[in-house]
Length: 257
Image (tube, rainbow, N blue to C red; front, side, top):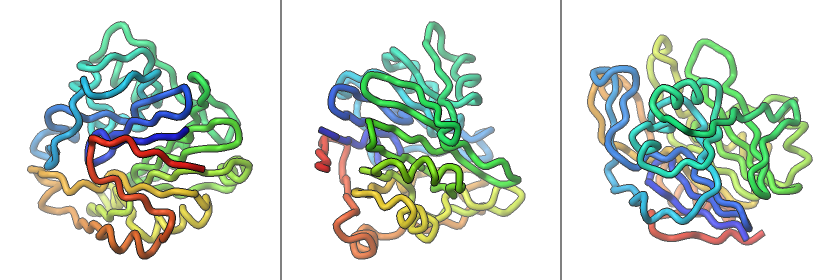
């Protein structure tokens, strides 16, 4: 059975798939700061789940090295039997967390994966280009998969070749638009049009929105960012029978496939 639970209304998740469970990108305490507080400081509008309410898990997955995904205060307050992350994420975590087993997630296009219990984890690496770009993570169980792209993603032909061999049960991706001036990275979240392209390629059974919390914030970014959040009804209408609206941090939602 595949079950999923929000841990905050932004981009922290608990996933239980048969006998293996993981936590994705936990940010459950305090604020997050990008670079320096005057540049961007954010905090949750809706209270996250309490750490002691999270069921047992086999690993924590940190998909990006930025502090809304790699949140040291939260990680330091959790049990961390194993943390799967990126190379940059490992460097950041090693500076602030002691006695932790870290493993770097390998590239999906090379057909490589880390196995934890029944699940295999591969990375969709951030494209190397002069603007904001972010990773995705593929979680496989046999020929089925979950694809997690918290900032959207443009999939390459090599990645499509691998993903076409899998049945995508769940796509977790952002539908919001968050745009900065080009010199500060451009599109951080590319919006509903890019999400639609991803959906057309992957053809997932279910779709869940992530990284779409309209967080409270202060600093330069708040003044210059152009932000748009689509309404839930719009997503239901655009992706009927696929879109699943997870409204709180209390319930575990089963996804049958």
